[in-house]
Length: 418
Image 1 (cartoon, one colour):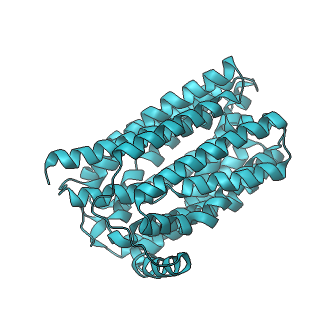
Image 2 (image 1 turned 90 degrees about the vertical axis):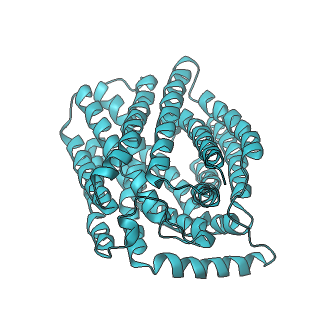
Image 3 (image 1 turned 120 degrees about the vertical axis):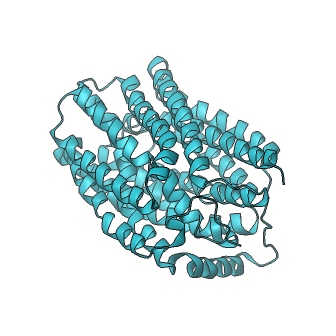
């Protein structure tokens, strides 16, 4: 295949990344405030988020199998439509001041929508790059995608905060629905399964059993992958909580509970850090021989930054720490995605990546409400301190993955796994 074909694959991946992220980011800056405005307490708001992650845990493997049996494109389209419908339901529940059980139920369905994406889009990219003869590094592609994601997050979160400030907290959710419907059309036109043939014909139960068995053999039973997966619940659960808790935390430090634009700024600062981190990722990879070095360093530093929030009482310092946390977490993402993708065979790639995401979501089920309750009792700063301690528990497991000395740890070009 021509270089232009590989370039088109990368271009489509960046378009999908931009669309997904800007749709989501319209509410990232004000989601916690939205839930609190709907009448939920801190415990209930983060418990609703926990039900979202519960939905991801329950549906990760079935939807990963959809991507490996029906196709990555079909999985993406199903996810986009599901997210549009459940986001509209969120808006309606806010209007109706619905009880907590309703938020819990719809949050589970919202998690379902995201599980159609996890694993499927990365798997589509890597398979298509193999098919088009791409010879570069995955870090370069994932790093640029992170820059694209950061730009769209920056744009969407600032706009979402401003729209909420000028109208109300519900309008950004309606904007999100509109963008998602546009992405259905875009993906339908641009996305094609290349380098991968869906396996159809078996019943759903048989398909799940077959793909799951192969995924365990090629995923969790491979020590280098297993230890990364075990580390993920500690970092992912805390990361989700910290991202959303930093919105009301900044308002608390500023002393203005209605400064919605400032909450949007929190997400925008994280987005800016993500842009810088994505741009630096290939540079860091060239300077550091092993991918696990990047992963371990990122977790250690980001955990220390979270612990430092407990002593902050000035807005400028809180913003500086937020930027530092965003940078240290984002610079490692391309390395982790490349490390895992280079170790997973094509036929099981979407399901293994979904299983990895499942473990991260499982970590969030208990972590989010527990840290939310900690915030109710002792304040956001103390809850972030506890989150930093939990996140640091991932370091020994990443060290065990490093000890396996898998060839993917030092790979600099795309590894072909048939």
